[in-house]
Length: 387
Image (cartoon, rainbow, N blue to C red; front, top):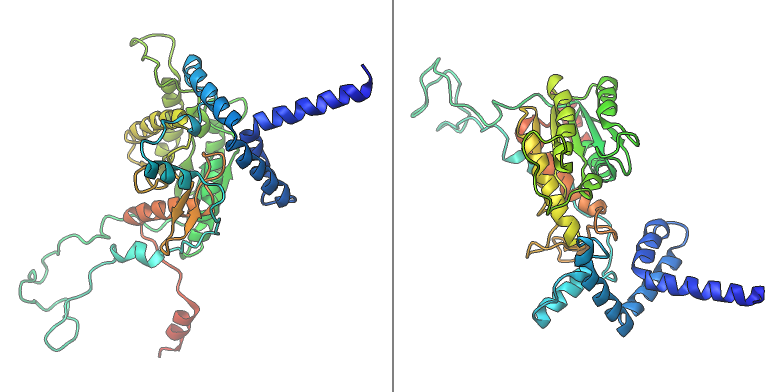
């Protein structure tokens, strides 16, 4: 066989392999080229992918993959394509719209609503007298407690002091969250953000990245008042949702049990230093099998965080779902325009999705700690001109 024929066979095999795996190729190209040096290439790859999806061969291939999935513990190519077929034409159209990659992608337009976060938590205004002025604190009002008698607790009475140094740690999801928090934190007075995320990290492989050691180093380095953690997506893939728990005292532990022990080590380090920490739960995932694993992971995180007074678990599962509670790549904004909130890998989130998670966290933080929005330049100028 001549070298020309050998090269021709090689390129044909390469093209056939690329087309057969066009879904994965499209995700890979989108992540590396869509917003970078070759957006046109990514657009053409998506076009090829969409053409492939419409062919009868793609339908046969999908059905074959889904039929084989149960024999591989439902891990073999068991993606969104393997979900049950919609029962009605309306449901089919809704699924198509939700997964349509050609929907317009708009940059995040979710404002940082610091005023809204704090409005419900502001202390009550003093009572107004008949003369139209605020009543004197030493003057007894009708129905008010007598002088020297303590009033009931205000909403802000049990709040902690405003944080000044916030540390964000975790995997690539934490890195995405910190991008949104960076802009949000800038709206508050006296708050500084430190970001220490590590891509592909978790508690499963300390040899790759030892979070038990790294967290303690970061606590000593930054001395944060609040720590925000988002981690577990890389660990959840090791969970077997059908695995039965081992007998008490068994030397062999399941991965959820091992993860819980390692998580306890992290939470203890934060508890010992008295540092308020918030563990951001994982949102819904696009792959049904992975979504089940993530739900188990969230359950472990919630259970372990409940054991420590300094820790709090924040559930985000439903924040990025559609009206029916299903995974959705796009969500409508206030104007009804669909905004892309999840990345093409159906795991990570976009800037808009990160903004939604950040707003939820800040709302929870505002209930526990005093947050002071920065005063505008106009406010500062007015205050300086007062006699």
